[in-house]
Image (cartoon, rainbow, N blue to C red; front, side, top):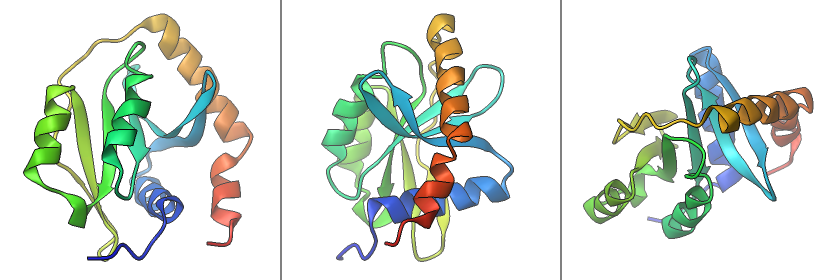
Length: 148
């Protein structure tokens, strides 16, 4: 099945669902020399770090591995039609978890849930600053205004 939407559209639709759930989040959060697609602040110093990919989920793993030094949980978000057991098995080995996005029904499915509670307070404090930067710079609003 051919994917009929872009990665940016998937991020936007995912964020719209988060908005409805009154979740605190930021997109394109700066992290050293790169940015993280989406960070959800789940309170109590717990953040979900998510990289979105339409097909190249192994690239998402590489990007997430750059974040693993500082916090967990880490997630890859893929279109639901890309799901297969091999992907989830590979991600589980690496302590990376999976969101599936159903673009047709505008729903999110969490296939695995992180049990890893490793946190580094210094990095979490820095992440809070980066989230605030992303929100203050209104990066999500800028993403919404892009013609797709």
